[in-house]
Image (cartoon, one colour):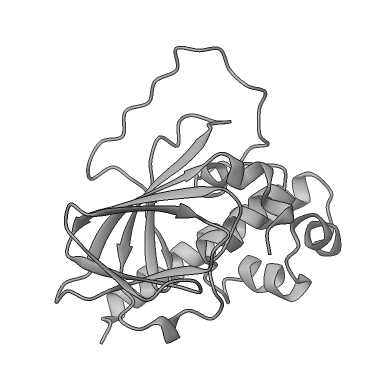
Length: 210
């Protein structure tokens, strides 16, 4: 059972995320309907996110960031910004252990990497898998692009709509087309931790994803 402190922390993360979404939407004078049409998300879903009544999954956050004309890392920062023009080569970002921002999204807790950089070709995120059963996911997770997952600690089970469940232990990895419905559950005593890397195509082809 989750402690009161962890529940409070999760609510605080949802509130901060919702506030950033609303701030970015209003800064562009966009209505909920306009963001809905641009992202493919229901107006009610966006409203629930803005009012901290819903913890969005990764694919929902990607769709939302595309609909708002920004990048996912910007929505996870304290000061969301519109996606800038591509920068010159030679960029570098160091992410220190213990200094990553966390976002609780129900079955997963996300810790995005290299948030200092914008307009990147990949989205890299440490994910703590807290789910123990696929029924904890309201909808299948799917999005455009390709995805690489490396298990850092614990063990997970990959569930998809095309393959039988696959168990992955620490050190194992899997690469797949992210348009396939997929979800991870922890099958170890402790919450599992994975490194999730999604290709930049997930942002460009997002609105064509199911």
